[in-house]
Image 1 (cartoon, helix red, strand yellow):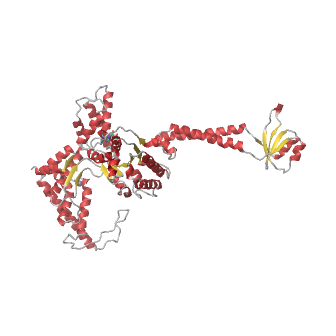
Image 2 (cartoon, protein in one colour):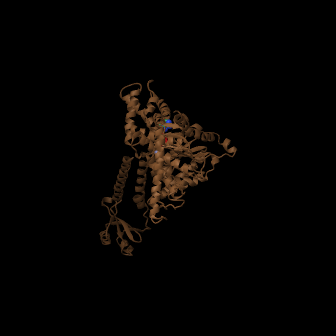
Image 3 (cartoon, protein in one colour):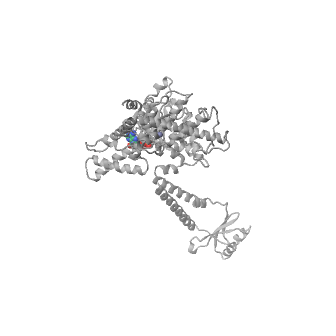
Length: 598
Ligand code: ADP
Ligand code: ZN
């Protein structure tokens, strides 16, 4: 891209140079010699002027040429208001003239402009995609983003079954919109696909279009923002107009976060263009009638930075998680992509998927391709297991460099850590049931996770429940200490949450007997900076110390509770972690079975 850019700048420079040269040539061809008035009088006296044309402020004429040829043109400023007498005297043909500079203008301006346009068009033809769109100043052509007759189907996207299930309804709607709307049903207007890059979000959106056989409009959020001010908004308007004409159809916006970042985030000086575009998008989303059958889909890997306005009901109110695939998911994805190559029968996809923890669909597609290239290079006519193994090594090395995979040692720590959370949660009453635990890394912050779903909406929490919750949060670190006799940084988020609960217990809920049944207002925090505003405390230093020591005490006691509990069930801890390392994911019922097994 960068290279291309420089390339076109050279064209512009060369173009300007050519225009200048041409300009000179044109002018010297019709060169008019400017002479002083005195010289003109001299010429007149010497009878060297053949004809003149007089305008209000200048005299233009032709000298007598040699041998009947027309002579040199000349021009001079008219000094003498009345020279007709003089001209008559010397018998020069003369005419008064209303100044017409038309021809000169034509040559000096229009020709260069025409040349410029010529160069412009030449460049446009040479440029591709993005660049050309940029240069054509937001003049959209439908063919830029609409794709019809996609032959992508649900078969092509594997290992994302949960997401697919949620999308089935959308496909049914697009196939027969009348069936849904007849009963007054409403379709979601906006579906947000959330997940790490390369997990198949674009693929899924295309598959929905392909399955329901409707046109697929797509645009990337970052494309909107590179435009000049006002063009992004115009483009959004255009996109929706075109889509409505083709309804039912799908509009897909990739990288929604580039466009829909919360206003004020990351902004010195704001970003007018992005904001205008975002506003236009919101207007369009609110404006279109869901009955027409335009479904808006968007993808992001950072839903947390999106402007909340985008997530309001009636906008992107349905979120679908497209997560990293687990082991079976990866096997399924490999199966999809291996169709494209000639693989030997001995290739075992289950083994391969075991070798590729943390990889996403795009990595796996890349893996298959890489293996095929390796086999070709070695002159084989089938891709063998050895080629795949070599390709795995290459890709893992690449991803490790980009810090996207965790090493086996870390994986083990994470497995015990997550198992620790889950076991404490399952052993203590009043904690939310564990839905699943996973060591498939998600994002940068969380290496693994234990998902607990609240059974009901809670308004009141008992003290023991809060304590148990703290113990659960500390279970991860406790497991690490028991198994490795060492602790890692992986628990920092847990500690933050546990401390938060403990602090609230002491300061807001009056749950500490030492501090007493008192409410101490929380410090107000600055809205943007995470600094505590000074002077907001409403208690003495002594109380502050007491609060601190109480908080520490609560946390320490719960940590010991978690430690004891896990020590007494060390076998289960080890068994569970082993299963987790093997399968990467354990769901709630399986976990209960493991817990009950000894
Ligand atoms: P995203 O939009 O989530 O960044 P893409 O849909 O662009 O990811 O995926 C890029 C490519 O990776 C796809 O074209 C496909 O070849 C492959 N891929 C990704 N996810 C899957 C999947 N779940 N099943 C099959 N192939 C996948
Ligand atoms: Zn944890």
